[in-house]
Image (cartoon, rainbow, N blue to C red):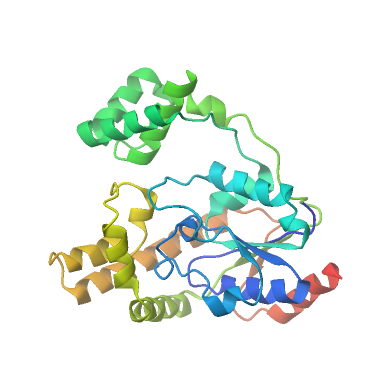
Length: 306
């Protein structure tokens, strides 16, 4: 896949607006590269593009996954491959989001993982509920000590993942991870952009955006999600704002306290994202910082596209 544009950045940094502008000016299509924006129901809380934005350029892989699923990097990459195979990405693809592992998989390839039969997946989800993460970590330590030693005893999702891979394939998840796949993009013709916003300005945007989310129906989304009676350990249930607003609706927190906690969690998440991008993305990534002439960068990409 040649001439791809990759735009990474922390939440609320303005990357979606940049992607939309580039897609319009290059005749491209936008591909979601954010793990939470792939889930349905959570339109507002994950800050997915609104109808007016969707009308300006084609968007793909937004809201296409049921929140009852544990969507993985591998599943996302397979969805991208489908878009390549069916010709959707024959137009210039603009990948935008905040999930670093998605960008790494796209640009560097990812290990193939075995298919997990539903009975095995259900078994380990059941064991997690019955025994808890710490006991399953002890089990993993006996069965696959190398994998267990890389995980915290409380990291329930990764512990279960390691156990189900071992159960389904008879091989350690580390062995699977060591077998790298192929990149989906041509790195020589790709443009790599990462937004590094001013911290104070980002905090202000986060505060205002969460208030806007409430005005646009975030509480109703949380009610819809609660009505599905999903496992609280599923990734979609950990979207920022879900637990906080659920606690407020249950009377466990006041709404002002829940809102403040959600804002704090968002700020902390943005800081973790920024740290990951700063240390994990290579020199090919162009850093877009406050004061940079963004229009010059855009014009150079547009000129390259023509």
